[in-house]
Structures are given as structure tokens and as C-alpha cells.
Image (cartoon, rainbow, N blue to C red; front, side):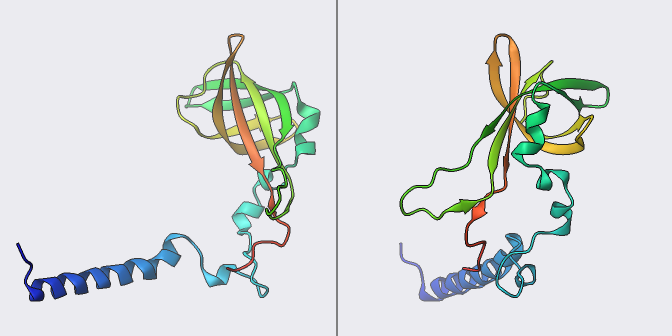
Length: 165
């Protein structure tokens, strides 16, 4: 069955109009606005991110607290204690042809006194010295009957920064 030329042209124009709307809003959808770049073309860090304690946490921040307890409130009436078991470097290895990265990336491994949730999600942790902060925790399996969760903190960036493409 053939499509009449009039219907074909009508469909083509509607498709082009829809594509124009989508491509025009793509910048908005992916939050890439020119006003987020400084005069050198680098992306600025939003104030709410820079004010988050995790933004300033380094591997050295957590190392003194290995084997100390963190508390997570799960739901309105239940808390779970997490013991920091390990702080492990996760920086990417430099390979031939890959850009060099600055900063650090590390994994926090926690042993839990009970299950948090079936879902991977962001939890608010409390610690006596570090205060309250949010981390995205992922189930890391069971070992010797204990439930483990992990979080990765990644503060790496290309050595030449995040330049405009």
C-alpha cells in the first residue's frame, strides 16, 4: 500500500517540528546551561553541592573511623547501626591513551546490624565526629552472617578540568 504524497509531507513536517521541540529542550533536560560555566568554559559547582559535607570528605576523613559506628534511621521507628569496616582506594588506573585524573575515589564498606532495605538508595548517616550526611548505599552481600553495604565517593576529574566541548 502506498502513502499519498500529501500524507507523507504532513507526517514529515510534524516529525521535524517534534524533533525541533525535543532538541531545543535537550539543553534544559540535561541541565547544561551556559550560565553554569565560568569565563574559562569550566562548569561551576552549584552552591548546594559545595555546601554538602560529603563534597569535602576525603579518604583521610574516614580512615580514623574504621571500626567505629554510624547510625542510619530506616523509616520512622527503626535505626540500624553500621560499622565502618574498610576504606579502600578506588582511583582509576592510568592507561595508555586515557586522560590523567586528579582527585580521589574511594569505597566505604560497612557491616550492618540489620538490613536497611531491599532498595539501593540514599540514606542519612549519623556519626559522633562527622555529624549527619547523606550517602548512597548499595548492598554488598553477606559474609559470615553479617550484611554489608558499600558507598563510593568519587572526587576525580580530568587533569585539565571540565572544559566545554
